[in-house]
Length: 221
Picture 1 (cartoon, rainbow, N blue to C red):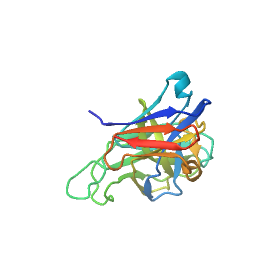
Picture 2 (cartoon, rainbow, N blue to C red):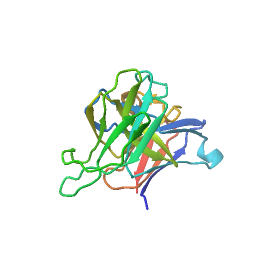
Picture 3 (cartoon, rainbow, N blue to C red):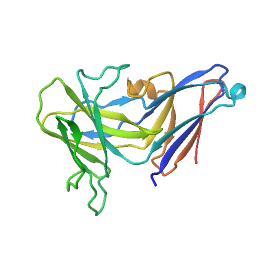
């Protein structure tokens, strides 16, 4: 059974707040600048008045993702439209033959069944792209399964005839504001004063509280 990483959010501020969730940018080798998408967004009322909490769940399973778009990424706009994803393994730091390499196709858009590559960096997976001319552009990167649906979490724009290695990082953020899932965010700005759920050390649950004074409190379990 796939392992779920879960964030529970409680709002102690007097007014209803909008929250959005996003992931730490992966480490990329190949491709251009890395971009981040919102993974989920929802409003939440004051806890004392409503008794309500917000639940965000993401599967630990890694997915390689590709997405077609007609323009370079724009903050506040959807990152793209047609997309495909594949469950994929991460390259080990020691021995083993994981299926950590997938190859993109553009017509139709897709990713091949992953196979093993001997030279992917430990902790990463690889997406190979064939030759193409722009537009359209192709975003490639890390897709995650959030609350039952697949969302491209972070990505780079692919180069023709190239390899892109992606090393996901198991850190997720909660911030106040409203960005629909799949919308490009400014990661650096969004991460300032955001709540951090660091699952990279093996925890699977994080309790996040927005205090009445606007500060955050987090507890990992």
